[in-house]
Length: 317
Ligand code: NAP
Image (cartoon, rainbow, N blue to C red):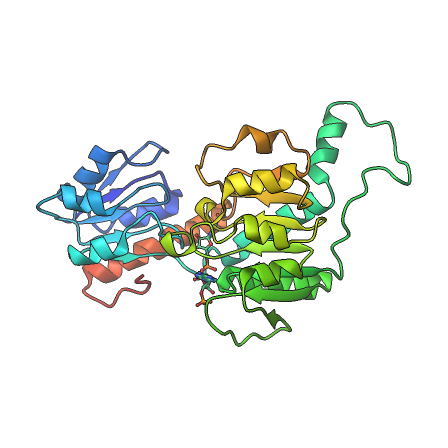
């Protein structure tokens, strides 16, 4: 019987379905796989359903002489924790769950943008601390987002969903920097570089995949190009931002604030960021709704089912 490993608890309807496909080992822990667990995943199972944090690196593949696993059906669109070339070299296919995550992650970007621009976290902390002394005309003045300019770095599925929310919902201008030209169904100005896009924006949002190609694509130079009142938002992956440079830019008041869903050394969040009122900090909430996590799970299971039926994989990476 096909041995399947699911590396985290998933919504029950997803688990019910995956159990119909083979002999399923359901790992109960919510933490990432250890080195020895990854070794066992590749040598003892036919199919693994891994997720963020399960670091299937070149060295893990190299450490297993006889790989039994044929498919890593990743739960999530981002797969920078899997060395896809190393997997392919050893005959292991990799799939992901694009699309299912798009709207929910774009909504979290908007939440971060609005909370940071309108000082919502700071205001809520003030109220909960019992320190609010009542409304007055110049209290807690934030940045008005309507009609402002957003720069999208990485105009893919999520980048476009954010841009549409900004344009149609808030009447914002959209500028962007992306790897390849885009045919978009809303007005947006393409920029030649990330710093150029950043220099034109009141809000900069990064939505590129993580990995070697995009590591520190947001760095000191980008922050130096942002206007001093502008807000930076990251819903992509932590390592696309040079976190030390971000902290410096905030400390020097080179930028106006930041909204972060992900961190360079996640789940470690720097003390310096935690102490800043103009920074909104989320615990990687991008896709955190039962509906979305269920859809992501079903997409991963559909890829497993296709593999078992010798059909083309719906979402290869
Ligand atoms: P996508 O459709 O592949 O979009 C990524 C975009 O980034 C593409 O337009 C891509 O290239 C562009 N890009 C790639 N490398 C670039 C570079 N070096 N410079 C500029 N642009 C570059 O992916 P998606 O579905 O939008 O997801 C994006 C990422 O969001 C995922 O990979 C994942 O890591 C992250 N994410 C986070 C959460 C969360 O919970 N916070 C949830 C879901 C996803 P082209 O311009 O060539 O198209």
